[in-house]
Image 1: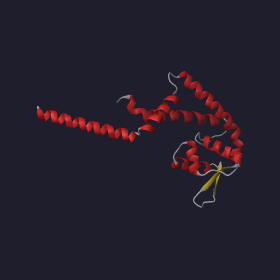
Image 2: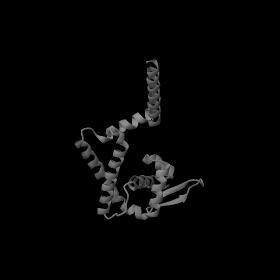
Image 3: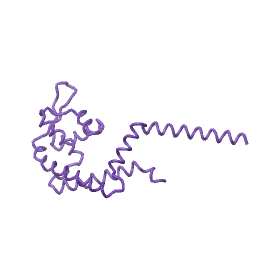
Image 4: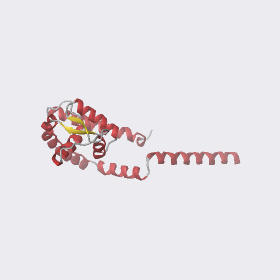
Length: 174
């Protein structure tokens, strides 16, 4: 099997290694159980607090972080369990507003420092690479936005079917 066949697996391995490393760093900082995916959510909610303190819906958080509603819903459920956010009913009964708890506010200075350091270290890691990963990922995202994977698979199947039909015709002609 060619390595390109495993691109999704390899991307997941990179994400897992980064998440595991960050989780270990958070444990070293006295935040055992803190998950790396919490950090961007807490940062967004902190920025909201500075703006108006109104909180954000799960949908708004998902859009801001760049994940699905389902993924953000799971993250918020974990943040609620860990008592880092609260959830209150918004003006629309279907909408819940997510806000930071005092416990989350206490750890924000540590997170801010760590996020800045993580950004520096990511740039250092990319400098060691022959091609920056962020640029390659940006390119993949643009290509998939222009022509989604499903469309690519359908086109490949159609081409394979046409090729098979041509071979079948050629075999019948001989």
